[in-house]
Length: 115
Length: 111
Image 1 (cartoon, rainbow over the protein chains, first blue to last red):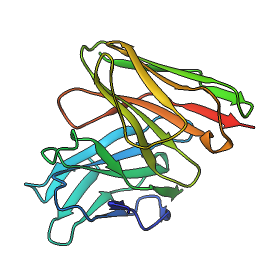
Image 2: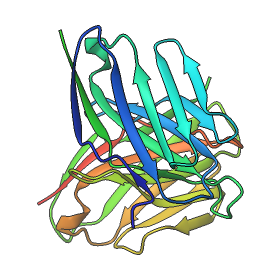
Image 3: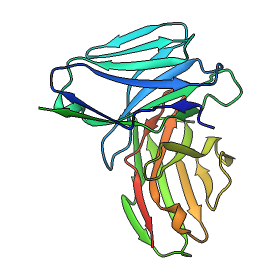
Image 4: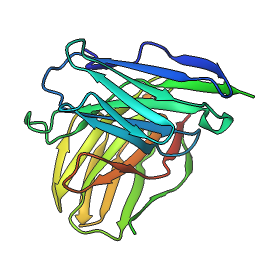
């Protein structure tokens, strides 16, 4: 049973345009969400996060939106750059749900930004 | 600043052979430590986590085990590898915050 779902395995975007990566979750106890970026043969690196008390968090070109009623979050990258080409993982945590705050990851979306 | 190391970077092992992957963290004390596996076409699966020396929690029953002999050392082991153990193994650490920081990973191929 997947608690965090990234339904698009891949996404291709032109350089300079917006990239939108989507993530859905099922567990209403999740109260903290993170996005990680991963290059091949490397460990994931933290990108941006959002608490469930917010609906938007912005950091430079990256913005995460959270829609709690729909149990949906998205990562917007504007403008997209070729260096953004990587696999993006969505992760969720139930900090007070008795799971030690462990992260549950989606399967990832491979973003390709074409020059 | 904190640094996390994993070795080896790549490993090719025959079925039935033992395994030992090591992870060490520098620049922090009492971290939570995690082992994940990324199998082909799949996400990051949490295998083990540890909140302190000698304290190991297993998330998925399997052919692997973990140990934490020192505060900043986390070891992933197996007595006999299976083909299905192939994958990309990642160690991560965190403090009180949920955010986790990952090591460079070990690519394990079991033949």
